[in-house]
Length: 401
Image (cartoon, rainbow, N blue to C red; front, side, top):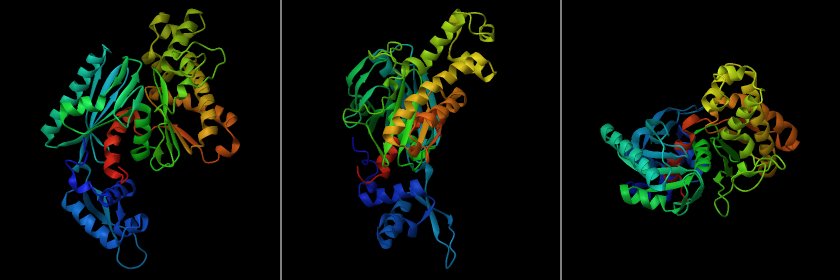
């Protein structure tokens, strides 16, 4: 469905270019927009006046000027447009209602107890319904719905090619949701969406060459090259979780041995921790979880690490070592200037990143480390859902579409 059907004044390229420039660089003056975009000042004045009349852009105080009159700055009107963003993960669906600046107005989480296609579809609709109800209560309309999913996603056609956790194969997700709600729907892989969200609104804002790594029950990454998402020829670029980091290591669900996911995913860390406890190598960790090795889970492994337990911290540091090795190899190929780490692992990211940086500093090429930074995502636990919001917002902001 055409995303501009409810916003006909944005169908033309120039208004989207100006609006996107204000959103990305604002508050900004008309003169600076003219300099940056190459549009004639009179064109900018006319279009800005129209955008202000539509309630999308506002004047936002005065800028600095050494000589002459101070320029009037422009910014977006945050609540002029609202979008729903969904993160459809293997164990839950998280939905947000967000505004033009990706500020969350409402959030709803729904666990997935049944991962069959129809059960997942029902939960997706439940979350959308509740967010639409909330938007009506607030008196705002929804412009579109962005969906970020695990698995291989044909983003051009809005099709889930394959989602291993629930067995979806060639499911027309965008068409299915769009037909149900009569709204534009865009679909993307969850790590790719996270990368886009970080590029537009998070710690990767404006970073032209960016790698965003999502670590959870599985591991994937989104790649931004030259300011554009790089999905790959078959929509599978960024599968960092299937880089081999341990020769003849554990069997991976992909059929290979020693993939990063087999040693650094949350499930792998928990499995290794339980084995240590059963072997008597856990020290005080076993006491902290009630002397039940099989009771070790993500929540108490996070909590015990925060409490200072040496075994728990070593488990996360070891995962960081493997992640660092995979990242060093990826950095040597892609040469990003920033690497962002997010996903379910965020609660323990402070125990993981020091080891990641240590390994990268040893393994990555020296010339590639000069301008490189590695840090957590800026959008936190909602990075994927806000990345889904970005799927809609970037289409409003960019003239290529």
